[in-house]
Image 1 (spheres, helix red, strand yellow):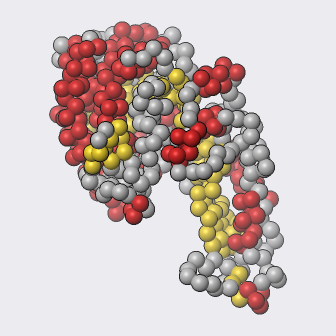
Image 2: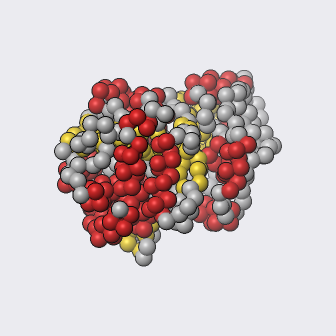
Length: 467
């Protein structure tokens, strides 16, 4: 079967590339209202692609915001497990546009890679699944897949999934499954097959400081009234101690620490710090003392300053005491941390660092999302490992944790089914950044892995996921 799958994927790889080229031309940026019609068009495009693949049930699910796509393909076997595949069809904004080497919505093939916004995150990864279903059917010779497949493809992931929880509640009766497959992640390297076992949660906020009710002449009032920009920089400076630990009260109280076994597994992961820095266009590593870079990236919580402003920003000088200043913050959470507890701690931290004469406001951008962590000793994860190893001709698969955040914890809570991650993005794909790309060979390997995964899951049967 391995050769049958590989041959089919190779023979039809050009079709994946043609479809990806067409879909990437739709600028479905969910974070920018002017592009919302394009997000709707993106949903329609993927729905039609599912119909062309053979899914007998394909629906556009509206939300209070932007639409999701649902597709279902039942198995002929009543004992076959039901698999829910999650991904998203919306994409990130393209700013700053001047840093792109090619036009972000005009896909460009450059040797082994394709460059465009959404190529890796997440359109390319969704299309390898459609090719994988076809390869699975070709290898088995069956009209229907060996498992019942359900696709739930969101349209607002890149803007915080504000309506996803409500969608899960509204459509709960349609989403029952035995196992979930998340396809919005990556691998360590082309020659190092791996699988994600967890993703961090996130709580974003904006802290505003208001001082005088208008900008003041710094020669007349400077040194005599509180300066909100100066006060805010003191708050930002107090956010971490000298060892890189976050100083928000209670921030680490609920953190689930890495076990010795997990640290040993992470230590076996090949990690090139020089290559990592090159991908980051950075010149130094930093972070919480006592942990490796890989441990910090996936298993430790963080507080980041995303933007800082206030006062005069124009050319030349304008000598004022500004009336307002702000900082945008994001807190990445790990297993066991709860967004509500972090919000309460940040509120206390801001209050503690608000001097007399300054009014502080904390604006929360949504409720935040919890972290997600899956065990590696489950039948589902072992089946995933075998499928990836078969596709990559490898004998070893390494578990990793990703630093990004998504609605996976919400899916776990709503559906109460085991979860695994099948993603083939690479660390240098520059997702969320200018010049996003995807390595085409990784998409083809992803299609192979998906085809093998449906066979592996079918062999487990529904009972296999209850262990």
